[in-house]
Image 1 (cartoon, rainbow, N blue to C red):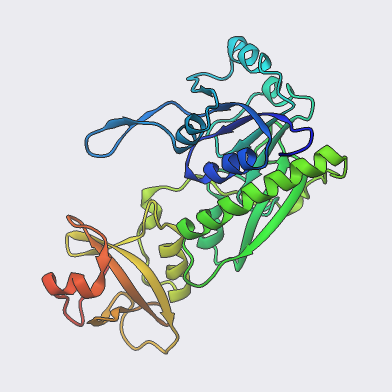
Image 2: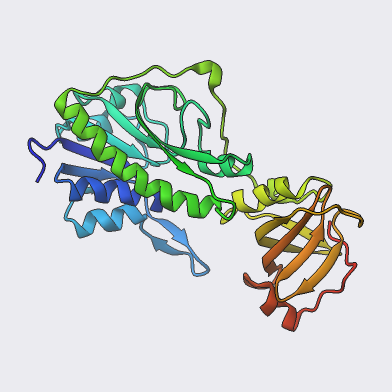
Length: 314
């Protein structure tokens, strides 16, 4: 057990937040309550489904709060009644008001999925992959009322591999975030953590993604298209058109070779994947999803839906 554990209120919602909560529990901190988003309808049956964080909290016997409004005196009083030393936040999904941020003696700290001040905002992991970054990371920060503008407490980095997607990086960064969160708490407890101001001149934004951003422009280089496919996987997913239908494409590899075909031309379709000409080099795509089908390996797709060399996408 941790010596002199903090009384912590944890605020988080999606799968990305689960390792942070689990790390607090495993570390022996006193998680007095968990605040998460309300249950939402999910799937084809629109069944009411609890957030992943709620399931972990209930298993651990931690009280769960699911307010529809957080900017009320009533909610602030409810949180104050728990007498938290710290509020810890990982992907809660709402902007927190100043009185709530300032309530605990040690303030409110956040697990943010980028190396701040780069990629402030709602989709930092996706934009790092989209922009072809070779590394990203997690920053433990002291929250203020700005958009990820608070002081940096503890950063950590991870490389982005050529095959990494936003989904695979989110899994890795979630684990890193949990580890850094407990490390930061130990440093706060020991009085050995010195907040660092962010350099606002180096800041960049990572806004929410839209489905429209997924349309592939085959005139672009293969590397840029590869980043698009990987950065939008698993959501909202990159796609191209073929006649009046669309196809979603996944698991790209850049093949460096001079291109003689028009961009968007299918040059080969076999068990290795689809080889497609781009504005610079070729792109090999190994997974595909048809408009009315499921995601599958190209080899399996071609058995029922053969594609002809010379087909034009886009």
